[in-house]
Figure 1 (cartoon, rainbow, N blue to C red):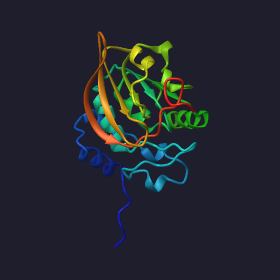
Figure 2 (tube, rainbow, N blue to C red):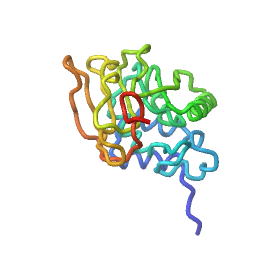
Figure 3 (spheres, rainbow, N blue to C red):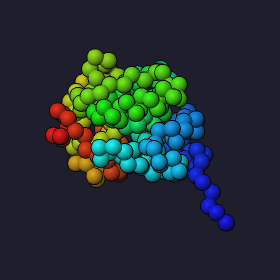
Length: 214
């Protein structure tokens, strides 16, 4: 008897299994075909809850981990979100289904162009994609209601704190790159206040002026 090929519903169940309960987010996972956001030749693994290798030594974020991070943002339907690290656009697409608009920045032009094509093919129009140093954010579009960072650094870069509105939430893996705690924070009148640890995880390093040197 052959083993069944994983399906989008398997991904939804994997996301539920890590504790995600936001029904809007679960529906976004169900409605977003991950197969449209994976590297050529990896479609057979698109609905496995696992990271996939992409160009420049990067990897896609495991879908259940992306969902945990997004849930930690507690976004509303009209939220203005900054995403640092576009990759091939799957997490971006989830955010776009939940928020008013998404500003996303990717340091590798090749990945950014692929992500733009992937998003366009899915008819996702409320995403503004930038190429550049994500550790500095996108100040011209600040302030943001929420910020999500898909790379690790021992602290939250100061520009990202400055670009988050008071009361807004930020989720980022905190650590040296390789062994981190994914943390949620809220912006207060005096800076960032740590809310909670969402999960331990492994992430690539945040590179740039306010991250690790390239």
